[in-house]
Image (cartoon, rainbow, N blue to C red; front, side, top):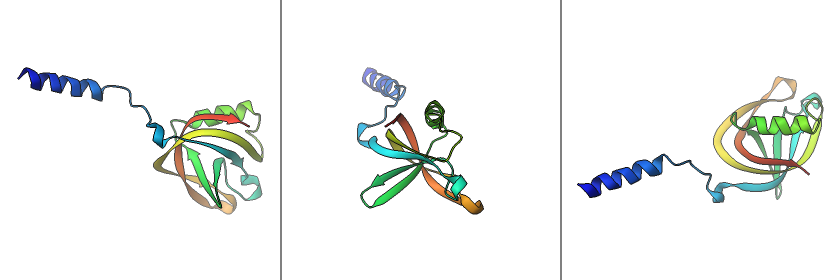
Length: 119
């Protein structure tokens, strides 16, 4: 009986620990923060090139302040912008609608931003 209680206690303790992001899921990449809605492109998003393909992302609601704060510090928040960055992120399964030119909406994958720096 003590063994069962001990195992149950260890299980409860382990489940209460802070969940860290597994390192194998974290991507460290060069990217571009883009705002080109004024030129019939899309509102704020992140473009990550990979070979011949480009991936389009938006931050999760929980991490969008990291990007907003950085963009404000770079003084590019109110402009047509293509800002090169280094970013650490983890892709999620979430999607978010982004406004694009001519009233269109596009669905971009959400990413959890861990770190963002202007290049």
